[in-house]
Length: 270
Ligand SMILES: NC(=O)c1ccc[n+]([C@@H]2O[C@H](COP(=O)([O-])OP(=O)(O)OC[C@H]3O[C@@H](n4cnc5c(N)ncnc54)[C@H](O)[C@@H]3O)[C@@H](O)[C@H]2O)c1
Image (cartoon, rainbow, N blue to C red):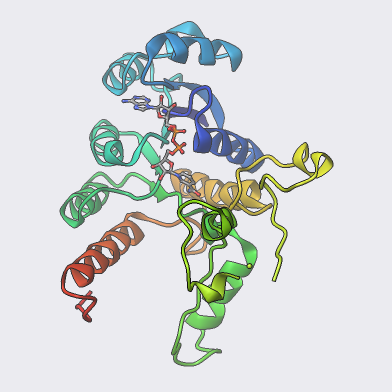
């Protein structure tokens, strides 16, 4: 299906992953977009992707106006929002209000109120809204979800999540900004891809910055496949793509963390 993108031009990080993932899923064809905050750069990028001039727009408003002026069978149906955080809500709102299915980068919004407004909009429009919680596309994360859902693991008593950030090492051990007493980070040496210490041979094989594991394109592609099935009314398993509801839960979680922090790290209600 014809696919558009807001953001994701030259040098943009996650837009590239979305293009790769949408291609791996084999359901989408990048047809147009407003790729860059700088229109000239956006046009240059569109040319490099082989996208027709008249499908590269200066802004999201021009994108919507331009696409809606086309016959329905030529129009872009689904749009990925890969712009900075503060633009996710206004962009998603505009796209949903104008009949486009949305694949939105996280965090879905900046506030719980905005998240709930999108939730309402998805319910009233009946459009498909997918949230790019990329790691939910990993097969073994899905396995874990099922094990929990089917109560094979019983009551979950503790969740231990880790996200290795190897670059912290130089801050701890460097001459400047040295943090002392962080004994738990003194990182047994764990070699991870995308770091300055990688050999040249490993380096030329790495496509993501440090912290993003291999398999991320395929994981995001799984989310794209679920997104496509929903748009086309094909059967799919709940959880094949994170929805607007996960976005609301996420925003409530972030909001509660901030509240807890302001209240001297006390327990707060979600
Ligand atoms: N799902 C994931 O694993 C993951 C990983 C990294 C980043 N992200 C999210 O992706 C989003 C983008 O991050 P990034 O690192 O790719 O940022 P980036 O700065 O590399 O790219 C942002 C792009 O948006 C464009 N842009 C900005 N304003 C625009 C506008 N008004 N109209 C059209 N284009 C506009 C910029 O020109 C640029 O091309 C962030 O919200 C971030 O949280 C998600």
